[in-house]
Length: 229
Length: 174
Ligand SMILES: Nc1ncnc2c1ncn2[C@@H]1O[C@H](COP(=O)(O)OP(=O)(O)OP(=O)(O)O)[C@@H](O)[C@H]1O
Ligand SMILES: [Mg+2]
Image 1 (spheres, each protein chain N blue to C red):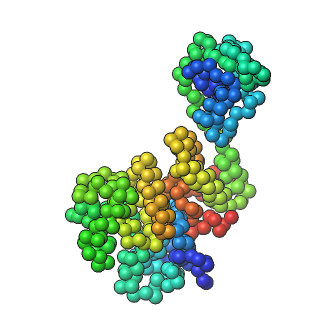
Image 2 (image 1 turned 90 degrees about the horizontal axis):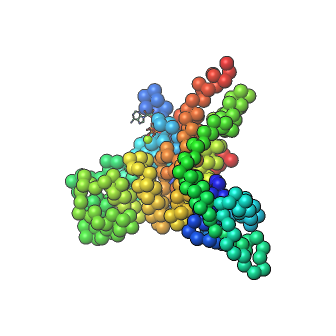
Image 3 (image 1 turned 90 degrees about the vertical axis):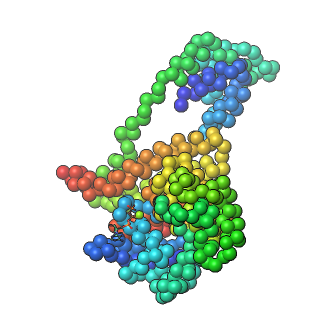
């Protein structure tokens, strides 16, 4: 099987078992550059496992994941983590900022890890914080900002390296609806402006409404609703 | 929506011509469904008959839309009473979706598929509303949010029903 033409990231026939649990049972996925795809489905259906496999964080038992023409499983661990650092960005529900660092240091961190000098890294970080309307928080530590503010800082951090894919697992899960929507607006706007693809796990329909299309995961199997009709 | 009460309410700030009333209504409330002149005319003649408005002047060349209407004391009381009376919460107990799910189960068709397809259709509408909200002003945002929350409620019901299909299948088979 070959990935659909023009797709950036594709998964086919993914299986992943945790003991007796089949977290993924033949799931598939594909996303184009600049596309926002929502992964929906009930709790425990395998959404996060699918996202972790796509991002190269979890290795599936079988199945193929292709990113930009390269098969993830044929890469070395070093290559995979380099890919994660430079091409992927991550936003999770919470607990992703380093508490000891200031917000601007947190946002600059991925650039620092890639070897960018501090000054330059923090300058880029600050411009992303401006876009997400949190530059006034630059000197604060994550413990001193609200959940919604922290989530915007996390999005700035996910975008700071200019990733081609942003993985977001329930990015608004801990926010009220007004803040959640603002976060989704900023995330999708920023992603569109850089042509980054967004893989968005959510069980909230109003959050999924910011996507271009959705796939539904149930019992480890995926259903691409666009291709189904 | 009660068009009569809405037009009355618009008249409270001062007399207006029929065409002006239509324009004010469309601008503020008629985003998707502008009023027809015929609706304005029939509504105003009813309000006139009931003494809730009076004709305050007629422009030259006068069709019905050229009449200028003013609200009466009785009209103001009527608006007041309408605003103070809560709307009856809609119950949606006669849900077509529920009927379809039960029928699908009864006839051994794929009910999960039906629910997935419905979710997809709801999401499509929600995307359009979200898009309009993003581009619109505050009025657009509030109107779209109202619709979005209702669609979301449907979707939550769809999820819950999807999770209970096996139980429902047993219940329906009895
Ligand atoms: N590291 C793990 N060890 C053991 N079991 C796991 C692990 N990760 C996931 N599972 C199991 O795999 C299944 C799928 O989990 P997953 O986290 O992907 O679900 P999800 O769809 O993201 O759910 P939620 O909406 O609750 O986040 C679940 O039954 C879960 O218990
Ligand atoms: Mg999860």
